[in-house]
Length: 339
Image 1 (spheres, rainbow, N blue to C red):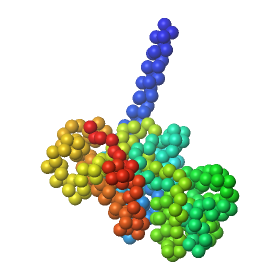
Image 2: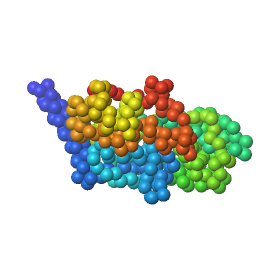
Image 3: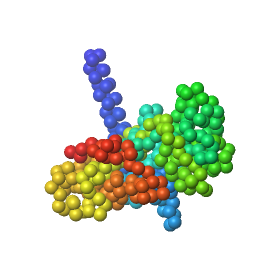
Image 4: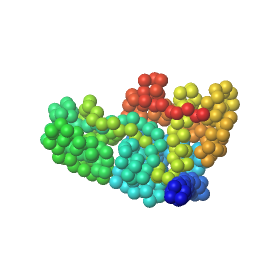
């Protein structure tokens, strides 16, 4: 009898868990469809990742992933600029449906804060920028220095860890957003500014004299940047993950924004046929129609197109692909198969 009672209790607990997570998942997607709008939290002003163009429209690497997901769901997208301090409360409260704003995937954020990370969109690491005339050539030269950093970030924690680990003295000046960090650094109130290396490259482009500054060669951390949603939004998180995977696979397969519709009509590749809705029921598996991936690729292009458009060597940031090359080109980008 005790075993029976225990089994029934476990069963009811499991059903309750499935019911609650299933409700949360379906509710999120249903709310997005009903409102006709995906609400996406982004950086307030990071060139190349999320910044307003001359028409007042957000453009950038991070915003394009939001546009791709909105296209897959067939809704509009609205961007919410959020500081590092604002981003997690905004997601937890439901003010936004997801974040795509240079957020590092960590264990505590994935477990303790109640979030789900979908897939890494950019492999980064923390670096430092200094004035060229400072005489600083290495991070080890910053012993006793004043360093400006955004508060409430892994950057702030990594900074303290690195200096403690290397028995270096540190004075950290913390601010809520990167604009204030940058302006404080430019006013020479701190000796260095720290952040993800790609973020430093973005900030350098909008300094008064970009040529007067340099990024130090050392990288002191791993920063896998990924979009995220709330725990329990399993169906919606699946959509985010598989839209990102489709955008990566499209580059592998030689598909582009310009040719995706033609490829859909002519391809003999079974995986591409499944991805573009020619065969199978992959769309239904994530609560969408068969053309979800085709619309996402048509909206923003492949991973390579997004990268080169906003971050690549022909942009003001001039970033190489590096770790963000495809797996078969020496990088870390590797999408699970659509099967």
